[in-house]
Image (cartoon, rainbow over all chains, first blue to last red):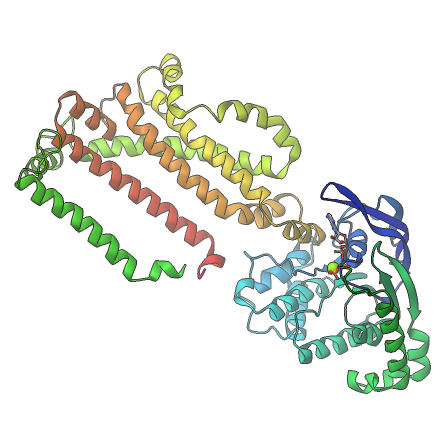
Length: 265
Length: 260
Ligand SMILES: Nc1ncnc2c1ncn2[C@@H]1O[C@H](COP(=O)(O)OP(=O)(O)OP(=O)(O)O)[C@@H](O)[C@H]1O
Ligand SMILES: [Mg+2]
């Protein structure tokens, strides 16, 4: 079982000597093989939630479990795509992607094959021996994604993984993520600012509020997607035209808009 | 770095040097520079000749002095950095190691290398061993400090990514800590070398048989300004060459920064 459970999680940070509550009693679950998108205004604590599932941050109260076990350390059983890529500047594209495979003890031949597959998937062929600083932001992001995908993890934690990509590449990546997910289902926590993306990809969308960061509402997408059979469409733009899609998107937009009061930054 | 390929800067540098040499040549001729306090070009050439192809000075010719000094520098530099760099990395990585070692290090750190001279003599006599000990302390401190800060300055996301990817033990050291700290390690090595050169000249005042510092010391005793000047040239050249060597190794060992 590879589910992610945040149970009544609260977290306080210190800033300028004062305590402030970043997460207030946050609970949600990514069930086994479920794709959960988390949306919310900037600074509402999305990354903090993901970091807790990763074992890079810990709750003051409440609990975070992955596969039923309390998360107490980072580890390669959960693959992370970081918001800031976090590539190793001193390693080539190839060696960045290889890094996790090696510490997991994947055999050489298999590692080479998996790397080749992911380089192709991420459209990075020919850049194996480039260093990160020689790549554009979008390419660096694709390396970061490949570095996570290549681990074939049961749990995938992605923090705005397509944020730096151009619109076309982003679309290809989204379609690809959905396709790979169908062929090889896994548990995904996917953070994004793009409501379209959340509705298109996710089984459920967690909408968060700011100050303090809390859950506003959790919206089920999967029943509607299945009922309306979105799967029959290959392309994202065809899905985005559907009334059922537009309806969900509008609903989430409203939830996000409601909490936006100008001057509050 | 772009600036390195900038053709104007070396030209300016060369012009400054030529102007200085020109001032020296002309100034000595017209009596603007007193040969008693600063040797004339003729005196300098005579001393340089004596040191290089003549009878030698202070019991040897230039190559034996330089070799002796290089031997001390290498011994001091390599034994100090071989201990200092790993120690600094370890302290940077492990809070426990820091807690354990830092108190000792804080005691050593503010002591100038030359302050070890009396103790070095008492413990090790007047031979090479005492000099190596002084050079060792001169090189040790900067190599520890800079390796330490190098690790501490590795960006946190990089450390976190390596933890998520399961890096542990030797792989963590080899693939993350060392390369992450490398720019700072090299800064430390350069400072260690500088420290060695400074300490060398002072250490050879202890009564050396040979050495670049011995030349300077002897020339000072003999009140022989031209030889002092001639004796400073190899110190500068050796320093320049060793620094260039470190720069070269640095570029070779960090190919990912090649076109920065
Ligand atoms: N280590 C920390 N120390 C202090 N404050 C922190 C720390 N980490 C996060 N915060 C604060 O917690 C809040 C939530 O941060 P988080 O990064 O989770 O937001 P986010 O929802 O991911 O925002 P964005 O969409 O802009 O990425 C922010 O106000 C941030 O300033
Ligand atoms: Mg974030």
